[in-house]
Amino acid sequence: TSEISQNKTDLFVLTKIKNYSDRIKKIHISNFFNGITNNINLLIEKEEGFLGELKLKVEQKGAKNLNIIAMNEVNEANDISLLSGAEQYIVARSINMALANMANFGILYMDESDGSLSTNNKNNFLPSLEHITNIIEPNQLFIISHNEDLTSKVDQVIDFNTLYKIDN
Image 1 (cartoon, rainbow, N blue to C red):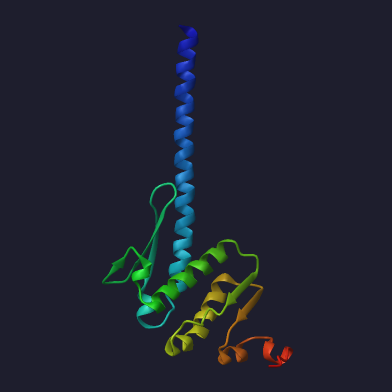
Image 2: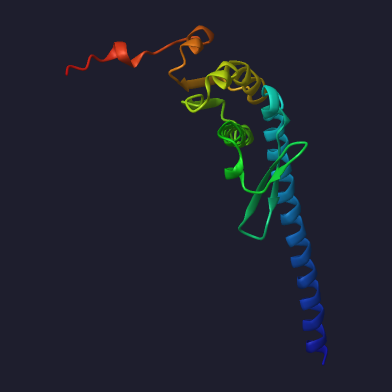
C-alpha cells in the first residue's frame, strides 16, 4: 500500500542513481584511457621512418579486459605480438612513458631501454629520449645503458666497471 509505493519509489530512485554512477565511472575510465592513448601517440609520432606512423588505440573490452590496437595507414593489429620487434619496443616504451607521465613524480627511470634496438634504431634513441623528456619533463632521469653515445648527453656517468674490480 503506501509503504509498498514508497519502496517502489525508493527502488526507482536508487536504480537511477546507480545507473548515473555507472555512466560516470565509464566516462572517467574512458577519459583516463583517452589521456593515455593521446600521450602514447604523442610519444610515438617523433620516431624515425615507419615507426613514427604507428598509432595506438586502447579500448575497454568488458570490465576486466583492455584491447591495445596498433595501426598504421595500411594495417591494424589487435595483437601487438604480431608487430616487428622495433614496433613492439616502441609501443611498450610509449605505454610505459605515458603511464609514467600520468603519475609523474619527477623521476624517470629507464633500464636498458635501448638494449634490444637495432643499430639504426639505437641511433634514433637519443632524439626519442629528448622528445620523451620534453613531454614528461622529469626533474631527474636515470638511464642504465651500454650505449656509449649517451655519456656525452648526461650530467653524470657512473661506470660500475671502474667502481668495483672483480678478480677472476
